Amino acid sequence: MRIKEELKKSGYFWLPENENKKIPGTLSILDGGKIELEVVGLFDESIETLDGNYDLRRVIGHVEKDGFVTLEDCFYKSKNIAFGGISKSELC
Image 1 (tube, one colour):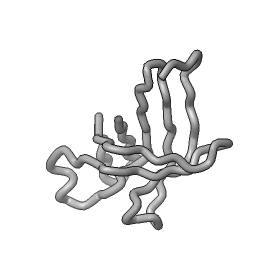
Image 2 (cartoon, helix red, strand yellow):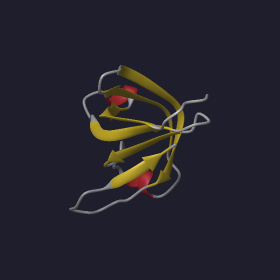
Image 3 (cartoon, helix red, strand yellow):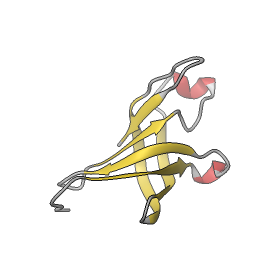
Image 4 (cartoon, one colour):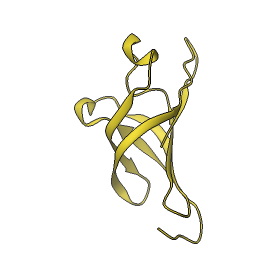
């Protein structure tokens, strides 16, 4: 995918099985088709997901001006777990 400028869109994102837990984030699409999602928090904060590479099959989002998006075969690039603070995570 060739784009002239990096696209950045703010929105809310969630897992299909947990539509009631929407978390804010920023979707970035870079030249070459690389897609990154930075979210405030984690999609699943259970103890099992803190221990390993929790891959996400599908993430649904609603972004400014463009509406709904679906991201397939996502994985955490980094997880920041702040107990009692603000967690920020990156997905590809």
